[in-house]
Amino acid sequence: MSSTRSRISEEEIKELISMLQSLLPETRHRRRRSSSSSSEPRASAAKLLKETCNYIKSLHREIDDLSDRLAELITTMDMNSAEAELVRSLLHS
Image 1 (cartoon, helix red, strand yellow):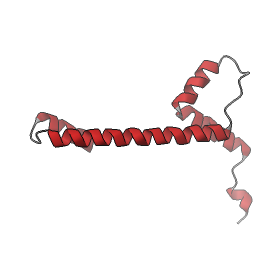
Image 2 (cartoon, rainbow, N blue to C red):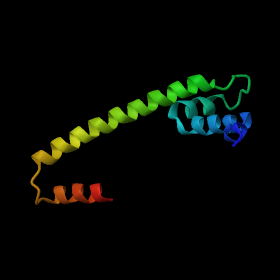
Image 3 (cartoon, one colour):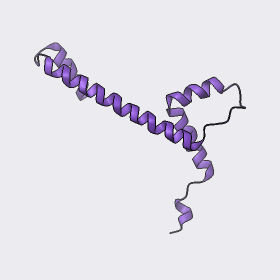
Image 4 (tube, helix red, strand yellow):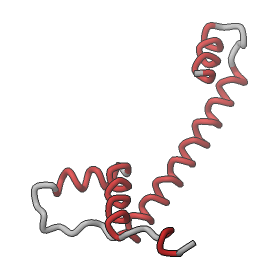
């Protein structure tokens, strides 16, 4: 197999960067704010990847925090209560 078949074209990279920018809250906000002025250059791929990594790390921290809070809530609740049933239904959906 040729190695050129597995390569991503520059146009595909630009499309992927654009899609990634649309997923990150900070870059979405910047793009909306700067959409009227096209003089501001697009974020570099390296900067975008760093922002993506930071965003994913923050999501992991948020998940860990919510998991800890949920575990604490579950240990303090009456397992036969309506609140417990609500938590169970949310966890199974």
